[in-house]
Image (cartoon, rainbow, N blue to C red; front, side):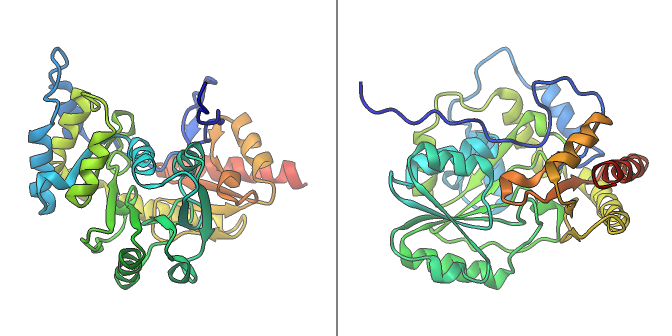
Length: 339
């Protein structure tokens, strides 16, 4: 039998697990005022009785027109994880190197491991010196999860140019970009943008995602997708995005205000890192113990050990009354853990 990919454990994520949970979930970085009614309506009206167009031409054209690109520069997917696994299969050879600014999204690291490739983690200060021939992929969260750090437009330009010179592909993961002021991402053959708008629209269960990249990059991603790889419901959600912005205009300013108020309250309990995103990290010492204690009180947060931060938890804002309950529970758990 030929050598097969290794069997690897699943990557931990925020959100539900196989265990029943009915409490408050602060571990998912999504708009707490969702789901967007316009997208829910589109989902309800989708044609679930028939196969969708296998080329998804209308959806690609709609997104392409919105972003000012050609349909051949749009790749559709069910979740950014799907795209990341396909990117690795297409562009990261066995034994190759994936370079990530800070810890990468767990699914990307897992995809690289399945491909028997190396993951090298670096910092924003040293990244340019690390992009050398032999590096196949460079990954940045824009903004990063869980820290919220974001690169400037000048830094993105420099990264794109360095990747172009090294014949590498720069992955710009914009899962949480809608929560922050708009910034320009270079449009070059060395850049592929990942967009998973379900977070900002509070509709993560539909798993809408797409990538923008050069036609030759998109063609390789499409080549790795099975037929009808996007269900009809997810396809209509993607097609409806250009007209669904009212929800973001109404809710995201409130989310920003409530996240800042939550960060202010959390600073009385420990050091907080936040850079404008709805999520933040709180230094608590033993993150696993604190997360477990909160779970016993029916409150879920994200233990950041898988990001290399075992002393921190990630918290994403919910509504004000729910945030008050979190603060009260945190005080009790920290007192219980540390006395």
